[in-house]
Image (cartoon, rainbow, N blue to C red; front, side, top):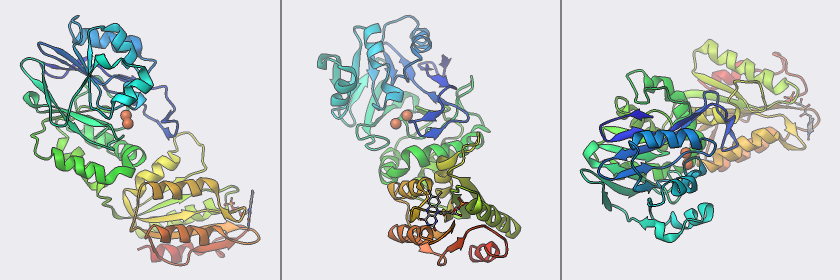
Length: 392
Ligand SMILES: Cc1cc2nc3c(=O)[nH]c(=O)nc-3n(C[C@H](O)[C@H](O)[C@H](O)COP(=O)(O)O)c2cc1C
Ligand SMILES: [Fe+2]
Ligand SMILES: [Fe+2]
C-alpha cells in the first residue's frame, strides 16, 4: 500500500512470476496490476488485480481504507488481470456496490455471476459523489476492450486510465514517477503498447481527444508507475504510437531453422551498423532467455519506418513464426512502411515472394525484389552490403 495523496492510495501488486502476459508476451521485468482506493466520506476501490494475490491485495485495501468498509468498486475494464478478484471483493464487502457501464454488465455476470442489484449502471459523463470529491466516468471503447472506461477525479486532477498509459515492468516502492522514470520504462511502454493496444490506434486517438480538455496532473494506469512528472512524455508517446508515427531506421525480423537466414540477418545488421543506420534485430524463433521475440519485433515496428523480414522457405511457404509476425502486422493495421524480404531455400524458394505479396497487401513499399538465396549463407553469395545501401 502506498499513499499517493490525502485521498488516493495505491493498493496494487507486483507479479514477478508470470512468464507470459496474456499467454503470449514475455515479461523480463515482471508486471504490476494496479488498483487504487479513493478514501473520502465514502470509500471507492478502482479495479482489482489478477487472481493469486488475494491476501496481499486485501491487506492493501484494508490499510488504505483505514479499516472502513468499501462503498463502491469501479470496474473500468473487465480483462481478468484487473477483474479476477471482483467476486472475492464482493464477498469481503457485502454492502459494496459496483459502479460500471452498461457494456460491462453482461461481462460481470458472465465472469462473476454478479447479481444485478449489486451493480449501479453509470453513463458517459455521469458523476458519483464520494463526499468532498466525485468520480466521473468517460467511455474509452477499445482501449483496450469495448466496455473500457476511464474514471476522472476532478478534485485531484487524477485520471484512473485503465490500461491506457500502462507499461510492462513491476513498480518500485515509490510507485509515483520521478524525473528518470519515463526513460526507464519507455521501451517497455512501447512494447506494451505494440503488443496489447497496438491494434487500436484510432480508438486511442479518440480517447486522447476526449480527454484533452481535462487538466490532468496525475495518471493512475492499471500497469506500471503512477505518472505525475512524466505525464507529457507518456501522453506524447501514446499519441505518437497511436498515429503510427515512426523514425528513420530498420527493424530486422527473422526466423531460421538451421542458421542460414539468421546469418544473413546478422550480416545485414553489421552492414547497417557500419553505415550508422539505426536498427533493431529480432529472432522470432529464438528461445534464448532475455530475447523478446515477436513482442520485441512489434515494438520496433512501431519505432522504425523500415521492416526487413527474413524467412526460409518452409513447405512452399513462409516459416510459421515469421508468418505469425506478418499476421500480427496485419492485425495492428500497420501501413505505409518500407519493406524488404530475404531468406534461404533448398529446392524452390517461395518465402520471399509470399512475404512481398503480404507486404504489398498492407500498402508497404517494397524497396527491392528481395533476396532469395539457395542453401548456405556466404558473404559472396548473399550480398547484404548492397541491401544495406538500398536501406539508407
Ligand atoms: C520442414 C521443412 C520444410 C522445407 N520446405 C522447403 C520448401 O518447400 N522449399 C524449399 O526450397 N526448401 C524447403 N526447406 C529447406 C529450407 O528452406 C532450407 O533448409 C533453408 O536453407 C533453411 O534456412 P535456415 O538455415 O535459415 O533455416 C524445408 C526445410 C524444412 C526443415
Ligand atoms: Fe486490458
Ligand atoms: Fe491490463
